[in-house]
Length: 225
Length: 304
Image (cartoon, rainbow over all chains, first blue to last red; front, top):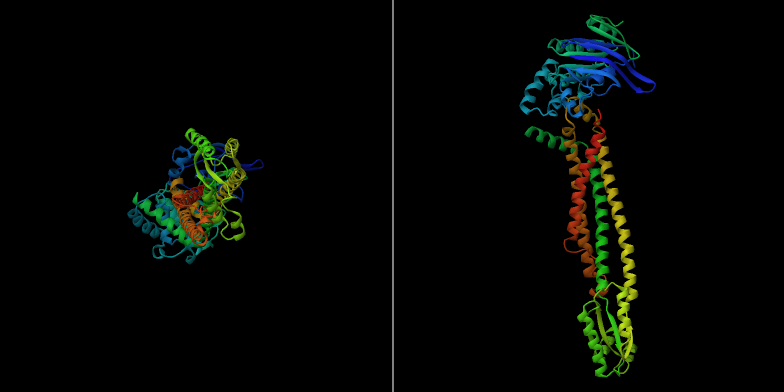
């Protein structure tokens, strides 16, 4: 599903975010990217959704090298990828329903599809009774659930999550992980960057560890360190 | 397709009403800038009209001694008739005999009894009033004056060449400066509208980022913003253009009712279709600048 091949990414002459990184992620796999701040986890996620381009190497997503992909094909790529962020990136002036529907509206889905799919995904994330609330009326965990619903509503092939539990207490974080695990079992590939040792150790999924831009460990059913 | 159109208009309206303060600021900026730009163009038009009116009144006066015989006067008339037939220098002419000349002088000095006493059929010469073909060429007027001066019994030739020169210089001076002012104000209008819309766009950068990440195309993202900018510019242009027409009407009414017709200022107005053309140009400019401004401003936040 995702193939990273000899990727090097530098931000300036003295900042190398990734150095000669290579790995593959299969369909329906759940992968943790771990490592200290500045180790290159977020850069890897940004490369996978073509928010960044590497100086060297190739990035294949769903069989296509996205480094060479023309700009007008990027929206099509991003419709296959859902993004989840630590700060949720919700639109504060839209309700829960509108935030989720927004992801379908802006790619031109008809109203009847939106009316059908949004309640379904809200039920999956357990927010069916809070569809009319605004983000400021929700807890952090609920806001992250909205963010997941928005990322998943278009049924993407891949979910990229950048520290999704970073702003949440352990109990709420576990709830979010259960949700991501459930989404993963539907066949969606999940790649998640995290610092949360406890969650990684609990989930026992594949762990790719980075240190100063270099992959130092790639372990199946791994732990944090 | 219908849902996309609905979406574009709904988002445009939502954004306009949500960022009401910024929207109002952008509209006011557009209104004031476009009004000032249009006003400069109207002033330029009024000034052009006034100069043209002044130039149209140019006449060459050839005063003839009172003791000129009818034969000598006929020499004059024949020379001018021939010049008129040539059609290059003299457009038309007429003769004002002594009685007519005294009458003109009395009208001119109606309020000055002492001066009126001085102008009688003994002291006042008759004159030929010559209308040149090119009323704005001081050189041609001088050549014509010299040619007429050579005829018999000529008392004096009064040529307004000095006035023509002054008017030509004035036209060039004011024309160039008001044109520069118009261009500067138009550029200022463009930049101010662009900046106001950019500020509004900045407030929505998160929305744009989300749209990009969920796979919206650049055009789909740009469209509501472009429409928003277009509507902002259009409203600014409509108010500015309307204000321009109202101010022009007020000015035209003031000139015609408060100043006498012979005050020499009657032409200092923009009439006919010109004010409407300028107002419409300002509306179109507002819409265009708004749309382009928001499209380029949106582009800045599209690099996700």
